[in-house]
Image (cartoon, rainbow, N blue to C red; front, side, top):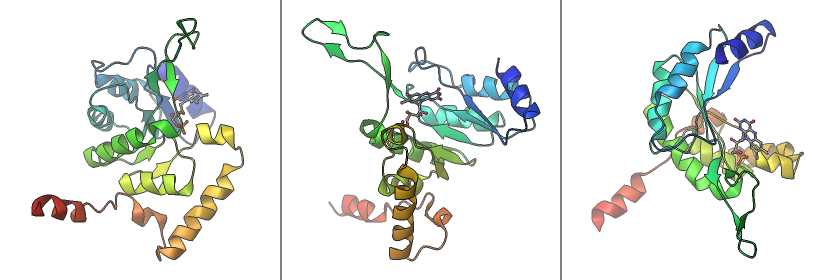
Length: 200
Ligand SMILES: Cc1cc2nc3c(=O)[nH]c(=O)nc-3n(C[C@H](O)[C@H](O)[C@H](O)COP(=O)(O)O)c2cc1C
């Protein structure tokens, strides 16, 4: 299936192949990191390959490393978090599928943490997403280690969000005298926090 899709993307002159290595309904904490690896091997194409990782596992960096070892050119994360909601009056699930994927601002701190961990675990670029709705959110992901970001849910709420994000990034760059946004990638400063810990 992945091989077939990659072949079609290649012949359609697509710039890259983004493979969804998430099995939203099935991926659990016991899912094996060889899923993205197998996917990369199966995708016979000269195009760049970027598996998208599920957050619904215990050790996301293990999946990122497996993807890198299998030849992925980048990884992207996170997909939605498995979640559910219940109507207490009827005691019925609010979703027809009983469980579904949670996205948007609620998942951002979880996604930022996973991006941070994966960026430290691999050398290939990490593309971050999960609840980005403002320029500050973009910056948070980039400082955590994302080389690029994607916006899903917030773009459904505001299809014209892009100008707001770009303006916010420009203001930040001016305020902090930053010439290249890339210089921010992985620039998290933990030194002050470490000093507080060691002095207490
Ligand atoms: C309505 C909807 C449809 C989605 N469809 C897909 C999909 O087909 N493939 C995929 O990999 N991720 C899909 N996602 C997940 C998003 O791409 C993204 O990984 C996730 O929602 C977190 O980002 P966000 O909070 O900016 O939406 C979907 C998300 C939403 C809300």
